[in-house]
Image 1: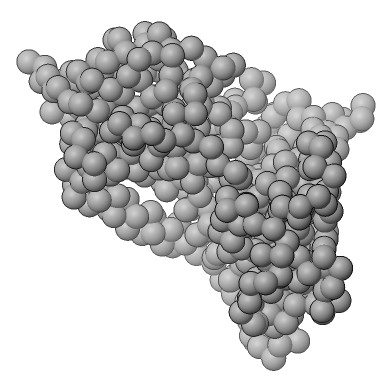
Image 2 (image 1 turned 60 degrees about the vertical axis):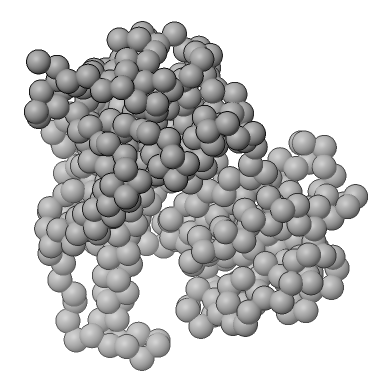
Length: 465
């Protein structure tokens, strides 16, 4: 006999949007039930951001050791090349995932959230049916938050299966492929492609556009392209993958047909919202193209139904989903909240890293801001030089309005620049001006000094350049 549960709030999906919503609901005294068909933590924690960064970390360690064989300029020397046990690396990566998954489970328990493990399917906007290991459960809710996330996009003519893999399978390989072909030169393809190259794999990247990382402008992507070429990654730009036959990727490049042999083919052509398989069509909500349409209070067209995260549009980022979760739950609690971020910082964990918040110079000009921008290179930053990161062509760039010096964008490319993302986002959110950066004492020696210097340069009085 099916169990029936009645709750004030039902949350579909236990990823960073869903579990944050459940925890915030608990803090506000809202009774909630969370339905998750997989492991708690979602794509980011289980098969995305966290495991990929763990793999990238190991790859960088391995590359550093490999470069030390026979001696290096910093005095470190190894007599023999390092060996890699990929199965052990993957096992270690899983311990990181398991620890975080356990942490989310504990936090939900403390928030007194009832977690229902199983695939949920809606029969109407407020009724969800779940097949659990203990039997069927029906949940009737006053309000609903949809946090179903996204899935990897497949190519119709090269479907996933066998040696054609998505990032999920790439992060679980227990044996390194000798040759890896990657379709897509976006952040996922280049992050993973770079990591496997550091492990010693032959890596070929095929991109339909004429440039890598199309979300970022050319000054930011140039150092990454230089690294890829120096590292021996083969890039085929303005090239279209047309087929996969007997271990070969077939590519059309300007009318020329290329045959690229590979042991694994990694397809990274984007992600799409998970809108199928759980009864969205029964809920009566309006759509905005492929996404669920919401207003700035995260409300859908159906009264009492909210949606957050990857389901509602770009950017598909963990921190955006978590922020929207706060808004949705607090609106449900009766607070006057809106989702209106000044900027959402995005990071690309390539070699070197890229971080961007707000507008680029061209975007600021297109928006009518009449911008002034300035760059400070890491070649002139002591901390970057001490980490052997000053010769990568990296820099910090600030973009501001000429009229009032209000900062409208901040970008950086270089080693460890992801750690600047918090300063970038907070500065934009608080409406900082160039004078605010110039008047803030930045710690020496740190990479953040380059932020200070870029503002000084925009004002016309940089010190170290």
